Image 1 (cartoon, each protein chain N blue to C red):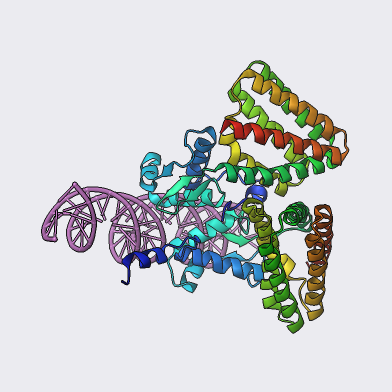
Image 2: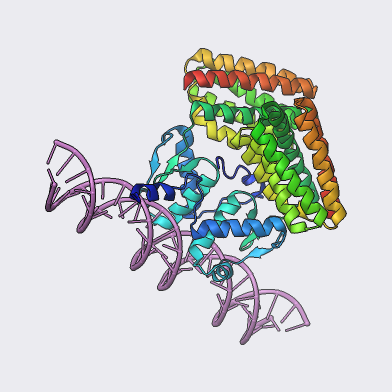
Length: 226
Length: 226
DNA sequence: ATATTTCTTATTGTATACAAAATTTCTCCA
DNA sequence: TGGAGAAATTTTGTATACAATAAGAAATAT
């Protein structure tokens, strides 16, 4: 029997991925912002985006609204929605907050480490190394994202993981600037290696301290690049 | 994906409240949820809300979308948007995350303490004690909120303060249940006293540890009440 | 030339309409 | 009675239309 029921259950996406136009636009914009294609302070035109995505203003509006609620976009004091731009002072505060969240993630992850999360982190790191060695910036950005997400996921706590992810999305355009040369990528990948070591040591204090130093370094480089 | 949009209004720079219908609906719903008029797991009907607010579905939709992005509402796997409801397990995870954030806030606040923030915290605590002694539950809830916000503000970091605030909003309906008798209020106020002492000691490690123990106790009582 | 006012254009927010999908209700037959 | 299947109803997502308002341009007065 083909099973109408089977088809139905196959269509039941338990993963929560909505394929609506609004979500696709949201994801696309998020991607472009985090890669730096859309730059801070750039204005996002509703009708322009609608045309570009072959949709009407309605789903574009919903996407912009959600991204604004996430802090990736800001509603300009004049007219229009803009890619969030942060001053040095604001960046410093954001990184301070991020620093705390990431340290907490590292500590919790090191306490809860499972075989699965270990292997996910290692796999992501392998991708980072591969991308760094081939000097593929775009791919390194993706692998790097994946690497950090795998640590967040290893906490087993989706709430703190989500906070960490959002900070990462928010600072994406700024952090992206510090990856220019192949050496930048290699240095980052090497730094990941030490971090993994300390997280896998299962000494949570060491893991946390290591992440703090990783974040501090990342902040300094980000500041230099911005 | 659990909590969307934990980082929102930190970048709402000095904006006068937008008087748009969508914003008003958003605020009204947020208020009703935090006061418990709208209970967890309750479904929010777009057309019903539109009628109630004398508006069309469009602004209602935008409000629901934003609240969903903030994690106050969730998109049910079936149809419709619901007030977020958390299981014991989820509450535990949320409190774990909150615990980390609050500890970080306490530590940073104790490092940066200014005369102004000191006095704000003390004033809020005085209100708490007054409300507790008079056994006014509603007022204690407000004063308690104010007390914790004053600590967040004392960090000087609006980004981490916003995260902490949002967790507080999300858990509001659950935490509220543990304040029943006058003794509950007095006990909470007393606990605040110790916390203040440790934050004002300007030993950040002590402040952090004290907040952790405060949060742990709060969690235990919340679990008992839910 | 500059400042002020008016006209034009763009842009946002809201309303309404419509189509697709899914849930519910109804019907009919074993 | 029960269940498969069809019709009706809800509900969501998107498109389009329209009104209000702010930004920009043009025109006029000082």
